[in-house]
Length: 141
Image (cartoon, rainbow, N blue to C red; front, side):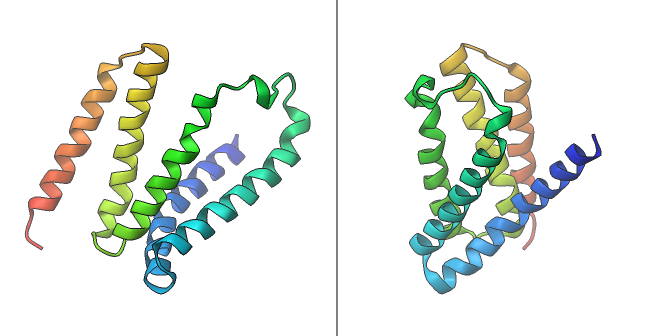
């Protein structure tokens, strides 16, 4: 159980630090190259994990998975390109909040479109985060 908490904290750290590093890399390498390297190393890491963990997963074949579930990669790539471009142009707090808000929004729409699940708590949470972002942005700079 401690490993799960450690991984959650580590991933939270990476979610905050990675866009900042990508933004700085975009200044040196450009948005497209930075996005390529980001996705290349993420793909290599994913393949290594898939090879290491595949003995634990049984009964799932890639041919059985619907194409719509792979759209996350395409959407993720477009988000990374935009994040790399805008990371040096917006405040650090926005770099952390906007992807979170985007994930909540996309998750809400995908849950509704794929499963017909409409969660009002998610809508309320998105409104609260948006309101907080608006209040923080409207302050003196």
